[in-house]
Picture 1 (spheres, rainbow, N blue to C red):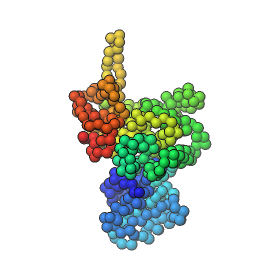
Picture 2: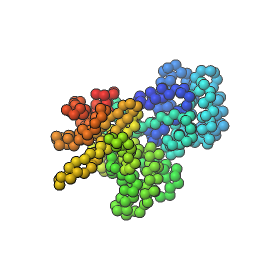
Picture 3: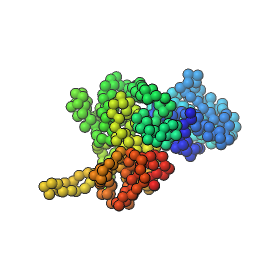
Length: 417
């Protein structure tokens, strides 16, 4: 079964011969290699590119071990360039090559050669792209399957497909497994024996206990505000483990660098400024989050929020958590300052949206609670509540748009509905 990745295919198509090395990054098993060597290569062939002008090299293949030598790799690629037509060089797991940046940079001045590479999250992180290529690399970050990619291959109704996605996530190999038991065991093994081990090996950590507990705490509190000091206090009071906040901060950085999680800052909407701390953390894949907790806490309210966050990031938005400071009267007629929260403030160029996630709104009280912060925003950008059930798109008297999660995930330009 061929799973289409139209969002990333378009990014690859649009970046051809842009004068930079294309670096495809993302968490392991999210489909980076397949995207390049199958989907993109097939598209190139459909546009008339000859097979011998697509030079594909998998450096994890033992048969290509000799090409892990930088000079051997350079010589091999050179030997394939036999005419003046365009060549596409695709190298999988480039981190196996010492001084690989010298090899890749050697092709920047050759006008008919376009270079694409993937790198493992164990050895090749987003910050490595910035420091290694110094403006000569163009990063394309690949996520696990979003719902619009997952749904067509799931064979399920929209409702059942959403529950599957919220439970087991969108890693392509997981999607193709047949039973829930297989999916569950694969995800748990992947988290334990691949992702965590990658972090331990990369940073020479001898004991995984703190990292394990930190992941458990974060997985149990998706969408909760936190910071290293608060987490250190949780370790001491709940886990009876004393860990300083500097260590916690370092481990949080490791988790984000390895693409397992993303950190989200808070933004004061009225003051128009970022707030340093606390932050929120979201998992790059809901299935990985659930696997971390042995599928014990399947809370669709929080998982839906995580899913919406990932969808917004896949669409290219910069996302913050919104804060709306207001003054209100207390029971004894005094005034107090409180912060109302907007789940997501999304920016892309000149576009901005304020979005609330609400799994259910069974009562007028719940609706008023979700809309309260949006009513206090006095600019003209669109305000949206996304509800985790099927319903028509409606607009409130205050101008808020309420839409179904299915419309949001499956309809093109859904934020403009």
